[in-house]
Length: 224
Image 1 (cartoon, one colour):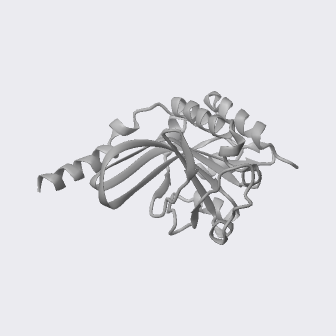
Image 2 (cartoon, rainbow, N blue to C red; image 1 turned 120 degrees about the vertical axis):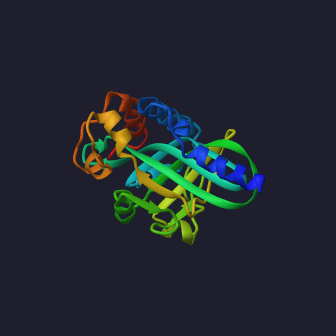
């Protein structure tokens, strides 16, 4: 019985404010670092052809994963989408999920999601959706190109990668929930904005987003 109470405490702790006390501007800097470091090694990064054809990208630096019988994961990050003028101002997202099984320990994992088409983008613009349920998701390939694509990968609306302890690889995030975080948007923009307004209405980005957007526009500029 004590073990079950401990497991519940772990899951609750991961969704408490103590797990989300980073300031949004610091998290934006972390997201820029994650993207720059991953793309710095072409043979081990996200294939450029997939990035160049993506509608949006989401980066969650330091997603927490912990478990004792009951596992849980929680993280905050940012999503930005292509516009006619380049990548949009970033909007805040939260990713949450759980799993059952024999597990123990805690880790931090950087997560990158590529939203590949308009249908996936529409899912992203909703208040929340479930990966693998409301939107199809597949583990993304690693390397200079996407020649190793499978049928599942070709048909997926979202491709997912993770980086933990220096290892970068595609992952499955089936069952995780992704939702907008209006409170953190307010901290960044000084007013309450939902993600649809930020990503589609030309909201000016905050100064804290300059490096992330510069990295994205340098690595994958619009080709119009």
